[in-house]
Image 1 (cartoon, rainbow, N blue to C red):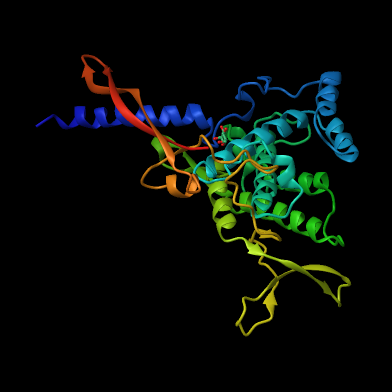
Image 2: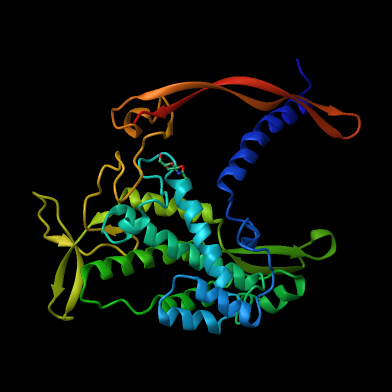
Length: 358
Ligand SMILES: *[C@@H]1O[C@H](CO)[C@@H](O)[C@H](O)[C@H]1NC(C)=O
């Protein structure tokens, strides 16, 4: 029998590789410093002066948003980080679906009222909320710092060097930045605004209070608490579940309020007339296309890698798949060397890869 510690380490070794590969591929755990992404610049401090203004001009923003961006040093970087965070999370959540959140067709999708449109609005708003709250607590914004909710001993938290994620500032800024869309006459605008709020709420409900003990040998004589966002991956998962159970809506004019309301008609045969969607529901208005073939919404599924047991039949839309074999390297026979590091060998394994036919 192999000695237990070595076995445990070997298991870790084998586990470490796919995890690292996954991190390299998807880039995200939701915990990283947001400005360290490749291609997004590495400046930690807010960009000063004209460089900051230039960055605001480079982003696709409305006139009002551009003005807000120019007034808020650090925001341009945060907006870019948020776009990246939202995109990576969307691609992660939809990695096994026919629509894989590719940028190709994005503009077409955003103009429609599909479930995918709903998810895009929600995940983008969530990413922006998350990135902004983090940017505040990380000191990358000029106009906000740590969360300073009363009752949370944040003065002490400062002393101990922990800084709560500032969700209060983030959501307040965001509702101003995204503009007042509630009450709009147009069903599409109402649905987009609703889905945006679903995204913001998903980040809010993931906010946790974390406490740390201080005092002689961790006696907890002094306790500091602060608020911390959950990893963005968890928010992504919540939103994906909401996508899976999204509610189809049509419009109804609320006579009393005199404006348009979202309305989810009841299923045929149901005794009720229908309901307003719940605040947490993602809403959509049109059934999605199949996303099988290239269209103005997606590049189709030709060439997509699938799992023969799990996803090939649905992902390839009945066109079948090609099988290729390839060699993959992984760490193996890991051993603890005296003293104290782990040495692994490289092993090679044959692996079959299935890809959808054209
Ligand atoms: C999504 O699918 C398209 C079309 O098959 C592919 O070219 C692209 O690389 C995929 N994107 C991601 C992020 O997996």
